[in-house]
Length: 406
Image 1 (cartoon, rainbow, N blue to C red):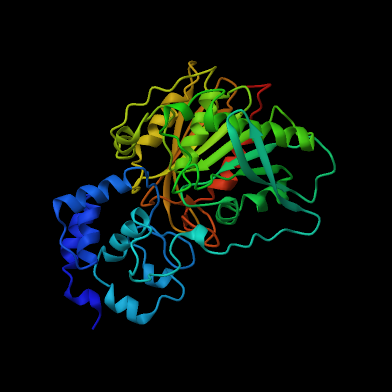
Image 2 (image 1 turned 30 degrees about the horizontal axis):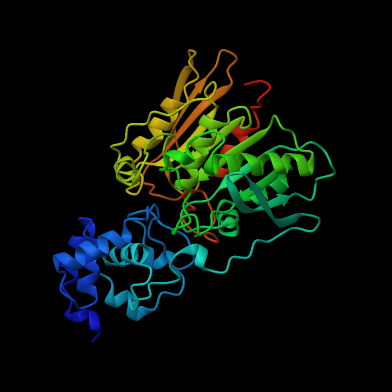
C-alpha cells in the first residue's frame, strides 16, 4: 500500500488538466487546497513559461498512443502497477515541472532530460568546445562543434537553439546535428540559456524586449553567430538558425530581426515572432489563440517548419503562422505531398517554390506527433525517433540558401 492510495488521483488529474496546478499539488501532498494557498501557489508559478512535454526514462518523449512502458528503459514494475491509470504519469510530470521544489513525488524515471548526464561523442579530429560571448546585451556560454574535415575553408554555420529545460549537450545528442556536421562538413553553434535568465532555461521569446534587433537575446544570439564566423573564417552568407519549442520561437525571432545574418531558419514545434509580448499572451499563443504581428527588418527569410498535429503544448496553428509571416511578398508555387517515415509516422509536406523552382518555404505536418524533435535520438530529451529526420531535412533546405542569393 502506498501513500498515494488514499489520494483521489482522478481529482488530481482533473485539476491538473483544468490548469489548477496549485490545488492538484495540495491534494497530492495530503493538504486541502484552500483558496489562499492556491492563490499563493499560482503567484509562485507565475514567472515560469512551461513548454515541455512529459519525459520518460531514457530521455525520449513518445507521442500519445505509443506504449510508454515499452519505450521507457528501467521503469520499475511497482511504479508501473501504481501509476497505470491513464493520464497519471503525465499529471505528475506536469506538477514536477511547474513546482520543482515540491518534494516527495513518485519517481517515474529520469525526468527532465537535461538533468541527466549526457555525453556527446566526438570523432577523432573533431572538436566540441565551450566558449563564452559578451556584448552590451549581456553574456551567454555556448558550445561549438568543429568537424574533423575542417581545414580552414569557409564553412556554413548552423546555430541550434535548445528548448526549455535542455542544454547544448542534450540538444546536440537529441538532434544528432553534430553527426550531420561531421558527415557534410559544417560548423554548429549551441547557445545555452542559463537558469538565471529563465527558470526553465527557456529562451524568452514572449518578452517584447527579446524580440527586437540590437537588444536582448536576439542581439546575443546574432553576436554568437558572428563570433563563430570570425573565429573559424566561416562563410558569412551561409549562417542558419534552428530551434525546438521556445528555441524554435527564438529562431523565428532571429529571422525577423536579423535577416541580413541568417540565410534560412528551421522552426520545430515553435511560435512566430510577435506571438506574445507578456505572460498571459504567451499562454494564449501556445494554446493557439495568439495573433502574431512580427516586426520585419527586411524581406522574408526562407523557412522550414516541423510541427506535430497532436502537439498539446504548442498548438500546431503556430506552425501555420510561422509560414504565413515568412512569406516573401512575391508569388510562390505550392505543392503538397503525403508520405510516411521509416518509423511509421505519416506526414504532409507542403513546399512553396520561387520562379526558379527553389523551395523558399517548407511545412512538415507530422501526423500523430506531439511536442518533440522528429527523427531525433533518445540519447537526448524531447525526441520522437519514429518521425522523419528533421535535422537532415533542415540542413538540406538550409544549404540551398545564402544571403547572397536570397
